[in-house]
Length: 245
Image 1 (cartoon, rainbow, N blue to C red):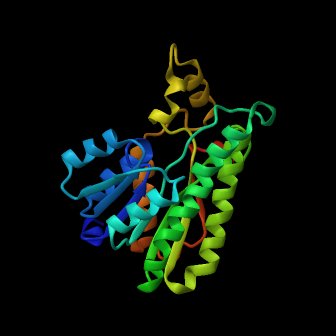
Image 2 (cartoon, one colour):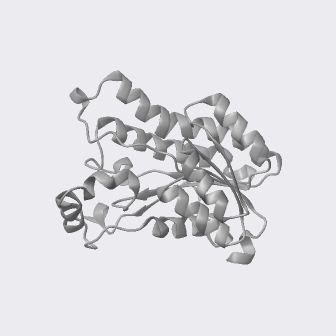
């Protein structure tokens, strides 16, 4: 697979940490050039210090000007990974104020829309492009987040399916990944103290463990590869069997 991605240009949001960083490293190790976009400049810089093929712009997916600047600086893009996302602390709807709702929806859903619309025209121009959107088991079932997070990830899945239907005959292949319990900095609170929450999640997961972000990155690489050329508009859970319960 390394030869397949040699020289390919990959744009990854949320690339500074967690799943996004693991995706960046996986593509870089397989010969691709990666452009990272994240609010965490220090995290992006640390990757650039290690990999010559990694460039970046620090900015927010919620800010259209930031998005357009990053996409312009990135140049040609063959593969887009919309990975940036934030949690809502499992807040129920009556515990969710408008500011929290907007922050979650603007990052997880609208941010994906802004980035995709900035990248898609160039992909359509060459009749070729792969888009991998980061959903969640919270986009498939309740209980994976609070009201805003669950709504935002359901929106990601709907958006991905429509994106595929609208553009698959123009050379665009769009799919989504729905992770379950992945051990990333975003879930650090679950491991705090005696880690009882993390233990509970592992016990409730049929596989009996949390996954590492590298496992999601490897699935991303598969979805971006020619081996997945007939997979369109699909949501693939990587959840240790959580949604099979």
